[in-house]
Length: 69
Image (cartoon, rainbow, N blue to C red; front, side, top):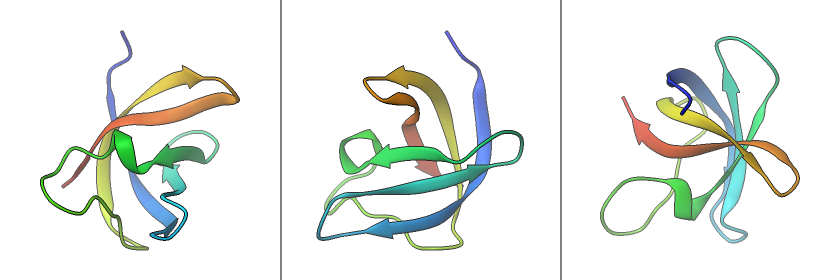
């Protein structure tokens, strides 16, 4: 199991339900709205600080268990 990391939301498209997070270390990671841990409408805003776990997805590494910090 990967440890939690922190990063910044690079961009997120509400209509498409995905975007990218720039971690403190390493390349940008894909994030899908289903990976956001919040109630109600699941969205992220550009520039938000988040914590997450990096996991291997179908198309490479992606962010999971995303929480706004």
